Length: 428
Ligand code: HAM
Image (cartoon, rainbow, N blue to C red; front, side, top):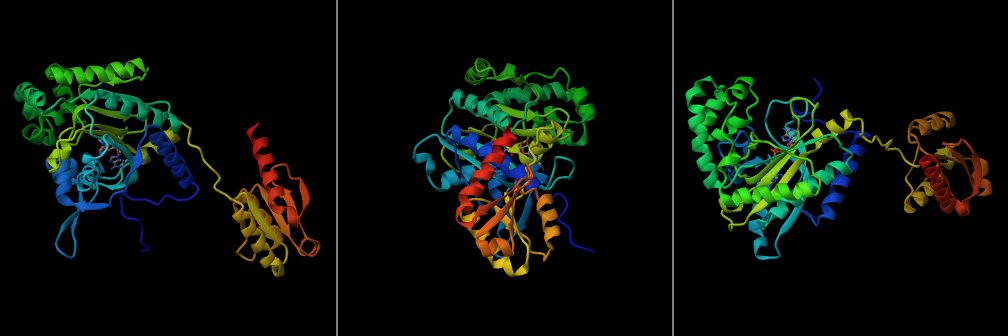
């Protein structure tokens, strides 16, 4: 049996990799507009970082982590998310003593052991941002405006932004009591997972997808009615700022998020019609996280977008931009003895920033032309006896099919001009 990629993982092959590059680029550009800089952290961390940061009672920590012991017997975990890693890095480098707020973006693979399905993988990619150091509701609003800006930048027009406030630990405790009293009479009717959630974190019952649980909790008390005055005012200011910037959102009483660190503003972005895994992103405030992992009492907020789900959504909405991924110029060698001359030309073009390639499979001239056509090069350069002896190259424009001879000394400016001309013609 040939070896295959492990279940829940996949290869990103060309030309599809171009879509990934384009999306990464757009997201980074928007993050830059808002003053965020890139952080890169290790792919694995000490297991207790996630246990303490994300929370031992969460699905991620209790069921989904790739945890292993290294040769020295240390327990390490492939990162299931990056917020905890960012908080760890902030503390480790004492960045809280420097200029605040700290604004970071990141991009990379995350790992969760869950049942794979469309939009759910065991290795997946997130683009995320984190801001540390400010409790201002204006930061929450900025982060939310940025996520909307990012969705627009990658061409995603149909999405739903759900927002809620999960309050601070004290208002959440008051809500917890009210929710437990509400659930108590029918707690036996809930699914086995929710029966456990009632014990550990009853708020999680609110976002259970099981129909019987959804029916059972209809009419549940609202978190919003239990917010303390500070948390209520914070949430009001966030919503007010979003409204004044014409950001469409839905207040969602059932949104509580699956990670333990959230406080105040919590949000998710959903795409209708991409299947069960409709959340393309999620995030919120986490004012207690840095302290929970033994750092200073520093607030934070951020979000992460799932790249696979964004691409799925773009494909569904028909806006995925499929680049051809080929080179601009293909150099066709008419006789093997002129191959070295072709390599000189190739290197000259590449040095001038023009992408170029040639045949490496001993194809005959006609087959090289077919190959150049399939690989969608814009220009094909012929290098044969006449060309080498008389110091020119023959150029065939694959767009308008015209053929011209260019003196060898004018190669780079002439090719640049032709490519430019083609681009303009195609743009019209
Ligand atoms: P999360 O909601 O667990 O939040 O993940 C964010 C996004 O990652 C999800 O909305 C989804 O698009 C994608 N995602 C999660 N799991 C998978 C999977 N198994 N396969 C494919 N995509 C997946 C967090 O991770 C938080 N760290 C976000 C955050 C940043 N909160 C504050 N700052």
